[in-house]
Each structure stands twice: as C-alpha cells, then as structure tokens.
Image (cartoon, rainbow, N blue to C red; front, side, top):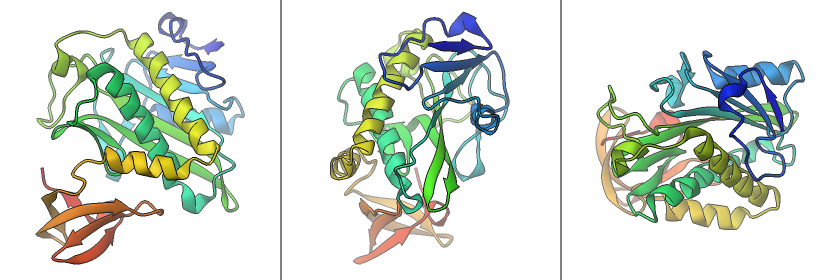
Length: 263
C-alpha cells in the first residue's frame, strides 16, 4: 500500500482489494477531495484505485451544485480515482449505478436489510426520508470513452446534529459510534466488487439491483415539474440515467435539473 501526506489516520485503512485503496492520500483538511484527486490525475500521481480522504472538507460539492456539509472528524469524506476506459461516455450512468449499489451494499452490512435504506435517484443514500450520504462522480473523457472517473463519497457516520433537518447518520440511527478507518476499508471493498461487476459486463444485474433499492419506486408521490406540483410514480431509470415517471397516465423522462422531489 502507498500511503502519503498524512499517515496518522490512514495506517488502519487496509482494504482487501486488488487495486482500490492501495494508494491512499490522506489530508487533515482540504477544500474538496474531488478537486485534490483531479489535481493528482493532472500531475500523473494517481494510480488506478487511488483514494483521497480527509477529516475536514471546507468546500465539498454535491449534486445540482450544492455544498456538502460535514462535521470535521466525524464522517467519511473521500474520493476514489478509477480508469474505466472500457466504458463509453453515453453509458456513464452505469458507473453511477454501480457506485450507488456498492454504498448501499456497505450500508446494509451496518444497518441490516432494512427496506427504509434506499438509493434516491441518481445516487444519494437515504434512510426513510432522510439523507445518509451522497455521491458525486466527475468523469474525464478521451474521445468517446471515459478516461478517468473521480468518485466523491460523503457519508454521515458519527455526527449527531445537522443544520439540515432531512439529514441523518449511522450514529443517529443506531446509537453507537463507529471506527472511521475500518468503515472506509469495508466501503472500498464493496466499491471494488461492484466496479469489477460493471467491468465484467454485468449490466443487466446492476440495473435490476438498482431498481430493487430505488427510493419511491412504484409508489405515487409529489414532485415539482416546471414549477408545478404533480403526482407521479417512478417506473424506471433509462440507460441514459433519466428518471422515468408515470404522470397522469403518461410516461415522462427527466434529467437531474428537470424534476425536484417533494419530501
């Protein structure tokens, strides 16, 4: 294993993997682990499977351009660098599915097979109607193929108080504290397992598994579309990653910024 920068907290991150997490760059503080990972790629310093992890992220990014807030030293804030050169750019949502499933697999080992544990499209992790964690994947293309992917993951672990009322954590759900390096190691193992499944061509299984854990799947709920509230039912996510809803008997597809969940 290659350990750089800040060895105090990474010496216990020893995942049983082939390549994911074999290089760990740990920082006591940074603006964004995704940005740090991108910088390593540009300097040709990131191996396939490199992990950047920090205790304190000051400018974390989320979906829709939102900020990701996490109390220092209490949560998992990390980014994984992969080189999925086998994946065409139009199929990049397949990577998003694999990562979301991996995080769901990992959370299931901690919370049990609870039906409240779900993946909220495209790749947030929810328990009931509360957000347990989020994922932000940034891809670099080479022609029609993906050259690098930076998979940013933020999971609420030991934090108990949140400014956002719809947030939760493992500690809040279970009443216990967790060892962050051990959890990071196990998460990396689940990530590599699903990534290898994707690389081996297991697209049908991944898509089926994703639907099985999809938040609000086949349930009527309120959404905001074109500044209006509508009742819709999620029926699928297509190959391009668009959310498919049945609204008033009509099937409609939405990109991320075209629909808002009302929770």
